[in-house]
Image (tube, rainbow, N blue to C red; front, side):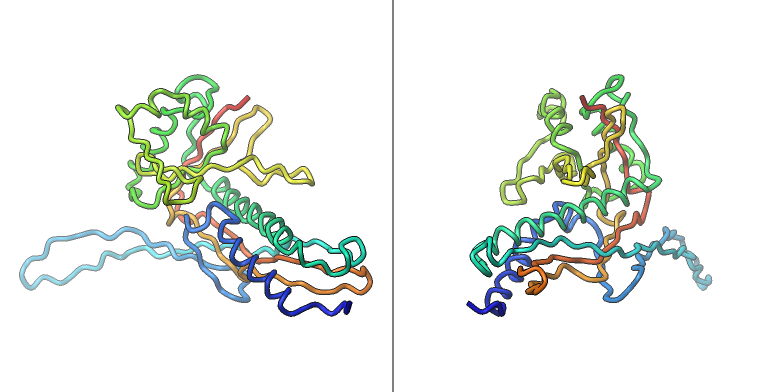
Length: 286
């Protein structure tokens, strides 16, 4: 058998990565996204408020002098790769193309989640203490309402709100009578949407696992030494995700390794655009 890679097999790997990657990171589509090829930094514009005035006959029109600013997301290069040994896998065995594409794209997906989470945590948004709803408490209805209240009071639109929490926090919410009782709020599971998005009181609740990587790093929601987990509520326009290079894949034969190298890669960065649309909720977890 020739060690030259079959073009159809390479195309199959690439198409599977692109198709399956759409579910690779759960925060996809929940923030502003921009692609600028070759950029070191990608800027997101931010505009202030305008004021409505009354006008008298023949009076000059006064401009609102809307403030313009911008924030920048710095690009970082990431990849996930794996060798397929030509002997151990019966020469160039593309029977495992599906498994490799899934594993590699999930690794990149968790990293994109982390990039977005880090940008939210680094923001100056309001923090809800773990004492809300009881001293040193896990996620509860009172914390949910407090986060909602911050966004309401800041004039953040209802549409486009997301609440990101880990499964431990969400399970605790499901044990809260005020959360599950329709007298307080209407829980509606939308089976037509992604399975881990639960609409509730104007939010899309998105649940993440704790994502402990093989090198010991955590790509899920951060937790400190006191077991305080940071959960995040935000509006779509308050968070920006920029791509210098969108997800791409590559398969090549490495002669010195006698193996094929499958790689999924991207270059991206994220930044908080508007702190008024971001709330950090502290939940004490056992």
